[in-house]
Image 1: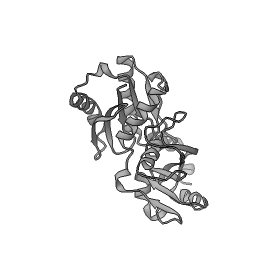
Image 2: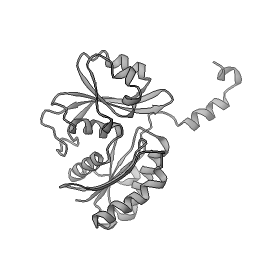
Image 3: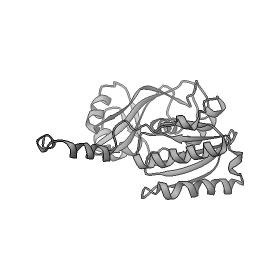
Image 4: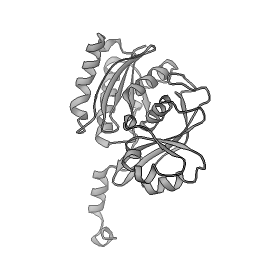
Length: 253
């Protein structure tokens, strides 16, 4: 079961090819927000390197966010185009879940609390909490989960508000993601906090591919037409436009 994974929620633009045995080939660019320029050539690169034509794909797995608005649009558009052209299903996965599964695969103990944090720009972060399953390992399928099970909703907040919430947890937790790295002074020094290595700054496309294989094997692929980005807030362009429409007195508040 051959799956192509497309990761574009953060600064990293990545593509990976994987099957039930593991990851076969990857390509990633992590600087300059070159998503539009990088994704399509990366798809060709990994397929060429693996000696696999696109028609051999059984599904596409894509990170639907939250994350960079332009990056998400590029990744999701690529996944939809491939799914439509090849007549294959799409497996949507969030950036926070990919980070959580990567933290789980990096050696987090059973029962551990994981807190992936993605930089939302404008002084905000996206975050969620996950619990490592007792019998988890990356690649296992547990009612659609791989390794860690989410507890609570995806949230958008200031780093300070997130720090306040985490300080009330009353147990140790592991932080990962570019948001955790950027606001390490606020989040990494909380009681019980442990900051993951810089290798987990972005959602790893290899982990996304493993999730895609597991979920496609469990029959969790859906029609590409149903895929939509998870933004969690309005785009900056829309916010700026709405501000322009407000009376001057309201804009000054």
